[in-house]
Length: 224
Image (cartoon, rainbow, N blue to C red):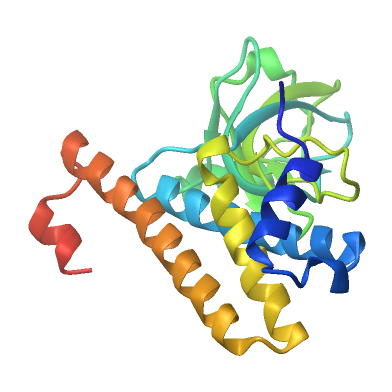
């Protein structure tokens, strides 16, 4: 059975040490959302460092004929790759001369006639996918990316968008956020330390995986 936000609220209430009735459900969900974002950011950062990704997904994106760009979903954080059937798509990257050559060519192309179509991500949020050539027909590509997690808004929301082993870290962070508001700074310090331990564990596991994979040495990781 999936874990819901209601389950996290139950775990959080235990950590609030008698103050749970002084906090509304909406405030608890707000604090849990903040904790979720912290855990997501830590896992995402650790994954990027070891060339992995725990929050990747894919979406079809259609670039209309007569244009060279498509605005992406605002939830997209990192674009990992862009693929399409029947055509090679390469990130512009170091291919600046090839990218410029495609951009300067004003003639619309048939996608299948191109050996390579270069792409580039521009803008901030939402980001924009741009291609080198204008095409004579629509092109549907698959964009593999990391996305921000949707906010929890109700106790019935599914909480398993964050891996279950890290649910306690979410609740610890939420307790640290809430308790100062009810005036118990000593208890807040306890949950702050608990969250810092959680964060160390997330980053430590990432370090062990890097060492096991040969990405870095123990000495490299210790010096960071």
